[in-house]
Image (cartoon, rainbow, N blue to C red; front, side, top):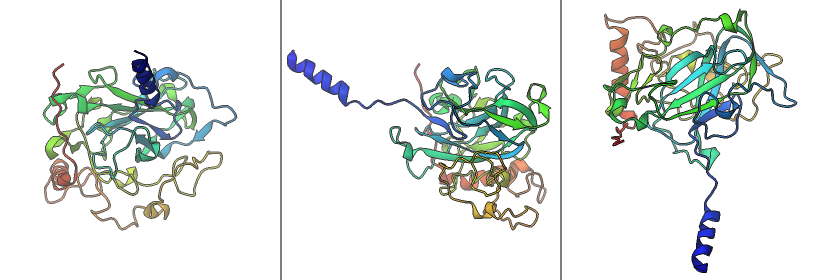
Length: 331
């Protein structure tokens, strides 16, 4: 018995302290460094808008803003959602800024949970609305659609979130910041995801099939191509990939009074750094993909609809994306 007790003690000491985490903010800084948050929207720090000691509250202006989040465990086809909190509240007046951000199934290396240096980064530019907010925060949600079996297939019913049928969702919230807009945050009416014309309405699902992502809050397995060097979404229009500066960008035009996240080590996008106006930039199909594959987001060519062209573009690229295998659940 003495030998058995010694063995049990050794085994318990040898086990590393692992916090089960899957996605979290990198820039802006996460409100909570703990990465096992499965209770939304911000876990134990929900509605805690206390500023960090000795760090002034960031102030940002409405408009494009580059953000970065990272994944520590790869979940095939599990998409992301970014939302803006209410003024001093995580639970009231939440506004979805960008939904159905597709998963990166083909990351160059698999992230290892216990090694943050291996986490998969996601870099995307979002639009901060013209609101006046004294203490706002960005919310990140990551529904685990790899766990919902056939419901997550292109023809499945999917799962819903927040407060819906997606039974496993990971969350992260940023530290608070001030938005110097004109419309009171409490009076701002959030546009529906469907009204964002240039954001693709389809991604790649199981076996390279097209999956419809047009409905806000309904999720299936959704993946797309992300750039291996810039960590930006190749299959998104240019404005979602350009470096917009502000707190997480590499451009030099950081506004006065805004804190630069100097610990973010990302390569500079030369095309974005040149700040060349889109009207004079040379854009090709290899560098720009809009929802209809034409680069302008709304034109038609040769009588083809945007839906047809997008489906054609997705089909031509599907072989480059690892296939999402459906998971059959028995309970």
